[in-house]
Each structure stands twice: as C-alpha cells, then as structure tokens.
Image (cartoon, rainbow, N blue to C red; front, top):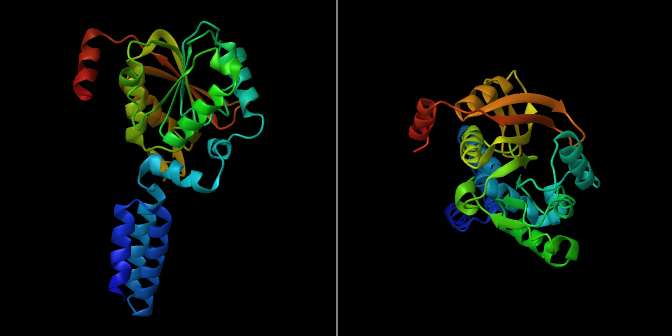
Length: 276
C-alpha cells in the first residue's frame, strides 16, 4: 500500500477535485486488494461509493455532471421540454400572465424559457444551486431581446432561502421539475417550509418526484431519489401544505400539487419553533 496514494486522496478531497479523487480512491482500493486486505478493500469501496454518490451534496453532483455536458444537457428534459412545460403550466395549472412565478432548479432555462415572454415584466423568478447554470441562463437572457424585455430574476443559492434571495416577493405559482428527484428528505422539508413563507395563500406549488411507496421514506441518492408519497403527504402537512397526487403528465416524472393550508395561530407558532 502506497502512502503517496493516501496523500493524493486527502489533497484531492480538500481541493474538491472529484475526478482526481475518484481515480486515487480506485487506486487505493486496488492496492489494498494486492496486499491481501480484501475485507478492508470492500469496506473502503463501500464508503467511497457513498461519498462519491453524494459528490459533496446536490450542488457537487450537478457541478460534476456539467464537466462533460452542455448546460442544456445537464438540465435535461429532452428537445421539446420547454414547450411541454409551458403548455402544462398554462393549460393545466392555470398560470396567468400577471402571476408571480418561481422556477426552482431553473437550470439553463431549457424547460421554462418560453414562460418568460408569456409572463408580464418582472414576474419570472428562477433559482438554481449551480452557479455555472445560472450564469449561462443570464447570458441566454441577455442575448435574446424577447427575454431581456421581461426582466427575469435569476439567482444562485445552495439552500431554499426564498425570503432572503427574493425579499418581499410573494409567489402565485412555484414549480420544481427534477428537484425532489435528487435531494434527501431534509432538503424536501427545507424547501416546503421555506416556500410556505413566500407563497400566496391561494397559490400553488407543482413538483415532480419518483414515487415508490414500498420505500419507508425514500430510497436512492442524489443521482436518483424515490419517495413514499404517504411520508411526503405527512411532511407537507407539517410544513403547511396539502398534497394532491396528480400522477404522470406531459412533462414527465410523477407530478405532485402542494396547496397552502391556512394554519391556526398555534400551528403557525409550532412550525416557527420547529424551524427556528
């Protein structure tokens, strides 16, 4: 076993060099096997897989994904996703021109760029965890007069701190395609709690998931996450929402509708204590 390999792992990890880290870890596991430490190699391999699957969290996963793909490929959804999502939100969700709209996980605007010309000026807000994608979206807006004239707001944030990054804004409709499909339960909870603070009382939140009610709560990792909708409904209720399962739609995945519930003063106080 080479001490240099271990040092390389430490350095690559500290520098968040995911590709180099993966290579050094694979070399380290191979060296353990060559030294006859098969059990240790298996344990290390399992540990490294967990770390690499998480890839330093959700942000790290998308950053790593973007190393060898274009922004639109990272955002995903297929060639006609922008039209499908526009039609779904307008025709099936009742999105109107004057509505204040929040696109959570806006990516490269691949899925929602057709909504910007539809909405009134200043009504489109997008946030994403990946700085490179947000910068790309801003450039896409800057080079398209039809988008520029509508003055969309695009922000990078690694948490769901909607009230902080969009101070004073109340949203009529929020949308999250392929967000809950890549985050852990604590992230889902954070999103629901923080979004409830900035959604209109008669507003709505549409989010896609991968459904698997055979899972206790969830199964998977940041690459693909499945949720039990019974758990999701209970969690939503605690955060001030009512969950309705819509199911399969033209935009793909499994659609869920979250509608705000007007909680009693005591329930609101309990929630504030839970999230303090």
